[in-house]
Amino acid sequence: MEVIRQETNVILVEPSGPLNIGSVARLCENFGVKELRLVAPRCDPNDDEARKMAVKGKRFLEKAKTYSYLLDAIADCRRIIATAGRIEHGEIPLCDPDEAINWLLETSNLSPIALVFGREDRGLTNQELLLAHKVITLNKSADYPSLNLSHAVSIVLHELDKYKQQGSPSKKKQIAELASAKQVNSCLKDAEALFLEIGFLYEHTAQSRMSKIKALLQRAEVRPEEVSLIRGVLRQMRWAIDNQNS
Image (cartoon, rainbow, N blue to C red; front, side):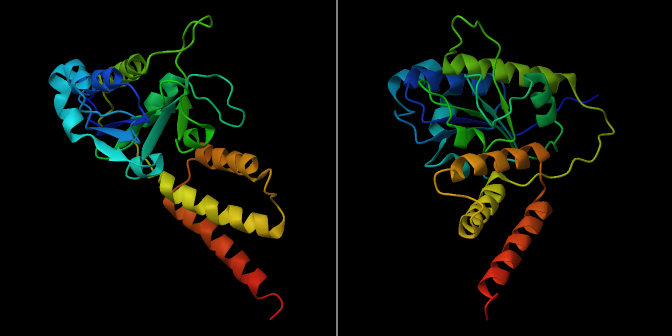
């Protein structure tokens, strides 16, 4: 068995507390994270309070990449886990954390992976959760289920590190590359426009029904060539509609 060495990116969506960001930067240093990425932060990540909390993790604050949208922050990540604090997500299936982390580490050591955490006050939206391949929630007291952001990050990084240290077999099975979140999202935008045009979707129900389709594709772990196949079908359908009366 060899220790798994993965390029792990921690992504915080709209963090508002400099103390939390500083604490997460310290955790990134503790657990050998590659990058800290911030999506539309609502405070200065280099605030004095953040730097004080970061201790030896200040370099993560200084080098943190900032994005306007989550989709851009995860564009290069081949496997993505998002965390959710609430249990009921409708069409969004929750995955067992142990199963999700094992799955996360199945990919090549050179493939970047992402751990996505939401806002301190309301977490991630359903649409943001659907950008991940798997969604987990952490076991906690039913009387007080809300976890501090940095505490949630510490639990997930600790579990990830535990599985990394257990290592992987020297003869590892070949793992297929998954389609990126951006590829899947672009495909679904094309599909939604076509479905609206042919009456399969209606404006008032489109978001809910497309979320179900998106969840299905994520569970299926579609590959880039499979997304290309779906887009080819959509293009042919579009061509047939545009030329049916010519």
